[in-house]
Length: 274
Ligand SMILES: Nc1ncnc2c1ncn2[C@@H]1O[C@H](COP(=O)(O)OP(=O)(O)OP(=O)(O)O)[C@@H](O)[C@H]1O
Ligand SMILES: [Mg+2]
Image (cartoon, rainbow, N blue to C red):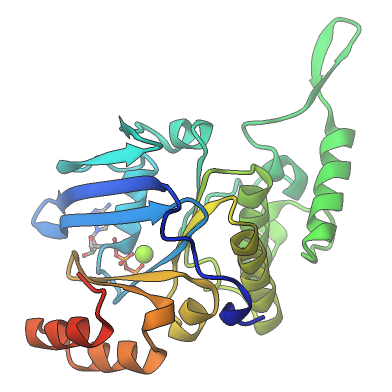
């Protein structure tokens, strides 16, 4: 499925998220310097950059895992600050972390429903409705084409790629407003990776959820994303739409060492950069 099959994002689509002037240090390490990003309703935004550029830190600030030293977050038109990933999730911001957040000693189906378990009442006792969760999890994973030996398997016993597939499936299942995926393809085989890309592409076609996708492979960026934000040493150095940028241009910019002159030249060439 090529990106060209999906109409470009409507430039009038409302802005659902703005992170403005975010800075963050960890002791002597400066992770983010005055970073601003915008995300429209239904848009798929790629966050790219070298190891240590600050990508995970930025999305962990959005999801309430880290506090910013300065800066503001405007979500659905209001300034917000989430104090925990649980709070962000309750407001529709669902994150799949690079360092995975599944609970290893629970089964696949229990993991699918962590924090939103189904219950049933028997003789006045509130019990987990395991049958319902097991059946729903099995049906949903089947729909997504995710192959797991059994939804009863402990997550501990799954392969890294299977774990990642379950984490992605769980995040999509919750119908979030914003879905943040930090390198969801990193541990996946070719077939599984293509499958997750297909899922993202489907969500993009529906334009019902806004997605921030951290990914290292530029080919995948151009396949499924509407816009690219390039982070370098804690700063956004490039903000460009994928329809007006080519993979070759992006590679040229990166190879140039991301100096100010190279960025300025690229910005002039692309026309819509920062
Ligand atoms: N909890 C932390 N404590 C101290 N330093 C941290 C912490 N988290 C991140 N850092 C530092 O902040 C910088 C940005 O890290 P971050 O994880 O955001 O990078 P990244 O762009 O996600 O990299 P990668 O592509 O390797 O995942 C790095 O120098 C990292 O060492
Ligand atoms: Mg990271």
